[in-house]
Image (spheres, rainbow, N blue to C red):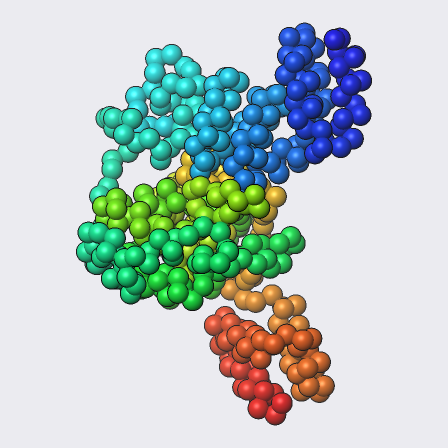
Length: 475
């Protein structure tokens, strides 16, 4: 078939890219020998950026594998690398292996920070250990394959922490207050009868829906025991501020007050990216493999798909009391690397869950290069940046960090304060029902927001707390 014939056959298929993805991939694969193949690939690839992206973000590993196999057919090396660089860290071994094979096939190179764990090869190659090549994408994996040599970063032993001594699954069961025979049921996948979780969706503030996997009462008690007895006793990195006692959105925003430039970076799918193997790896710092596997099984959740397939490995569920603490602890090396990068660039770094903030007292000379390193370190540590949510805020314009304005001092945006003031006025004049709009927890929301205001603006918050109590007393 000639190029013209191929383009004519592709044209009607591109009208519905989702339905015709496999057919287009088949046509491109069959005609790779065409001298003008790149023209056909460019023509088709533009229509498949979003469909392939959805495949690669699917919770079904079979769909992700399908997407990875299609990437080399639809995209040239540069665009393919953008998709593949995070898939080499996929939780599913089949998907990760296919991504590494695609990287090798395409000969992708020079798009990752160096992997300093091994002496670079004399001959540049996309698969040679060390150097500036995609082997850096596997940083943090397969550590036993590399020998640390002179010039490599020195390793540090984990700080000693006062966690309980556990030597078996029976010890884990005793710690969390259940019988050893009950542990398998608490780790059961899915959300059906007998499983430990229920699932529901809530709207995101920025649009779309967020899936919440909330543990049932029995499992929630077990996870709270793990949080109290183990996780709460292990220190997090000083740059982490989310879900940590005596730290808050205020402590996260305060270091960035008065900066010339503030940059916000968002991590995509933060909790789901921290999968079972990463959690086991964290617990292995303190316990043997049997105990680590039991603790990881109790704190991660395996989804069951509509056809009954169980997704493996499980991941941190959004809704479990242990998930924020585990995510913070798993991110210790990420925080250390980004903090060191920020100091080298003359910046300040903080992280609140999946929200990373960097601030510069003086305008940076090479901000684009700095953000390239941030993005690359995130990828090396097994995360992906949500580039659409990146924000660069310069002095003279409003700078917001975790919901607070930091131009001169941490403060709640004026429009938010005016809105709450108006709500209180309407509650006094027309009753709480006029503002609650059917929300059963509206009274708790009023108290909570007034307390939040008091944390940022003590005098105003104290005044509003008194007003809230007067309104609720009269209602």
